[in-house]
Image: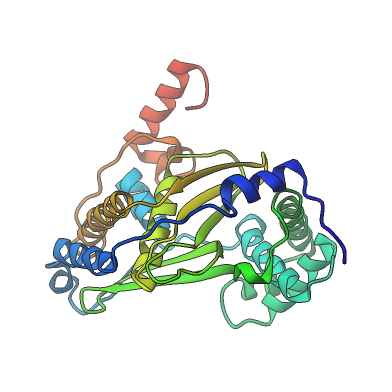
Length: 313
């Protein structure tokens, strides 16, 4: 039998992040019901205000509307696939295949297999893969292979007994189905036992940490709790470029804060999308790529702030 020798970073992930062998928290059996009640109470009038429509709410929607309302409104319907946008989907599919194959397949081969499988799908990234030119395909392969290779370098090999779920979809219906909260976690490990939390949720990132990553993780924790009735014991962002991690242990207070953020965000989304309220603006880092930056006072204020400080803020 081959014994896998872990790198120091892999061992750190196993010991510190996955907390192997450590005791797990136990939560109240009615926690999910109480969270749902809080959400429904906070959104009691939203169903009527939506009219005949359904409001789909993602982590991206919540992040944008809490950061800057004009950023959200300007970006509605503007998403388009690119090699950088597609790399996560391809890399996650490659990781999923690696768990099924079980052999030590090079990252580049896993990525090629993932692209072939995703090309056969009927939605999502499939159309981009079909229409992308040779340069875009090359850029995608390089970027996705980099992510898969870094994951293999930094994370311990995933064992089947950990019940790994890759790109696992989570959702919650509120307001008699009029509001749909939707998310997709990069990696979930473990399974709740009774009311004992034994699930770890990990979001893989490139680049540097930003505060909204914490809010994204708390949103996932809320959705997992509503789905199963038991929270994950921990949520984490793993930064592939640095091999560093930010994690939080999930508590009832954390979930209540996430629920309040969802209520505030959904109510604002209804005001902006359905009722046509004029969005407010706030200077922030997103001004640099906002669709409305050319004629927004917020973007001008952001550039002035950067110039005053003499560095990126």
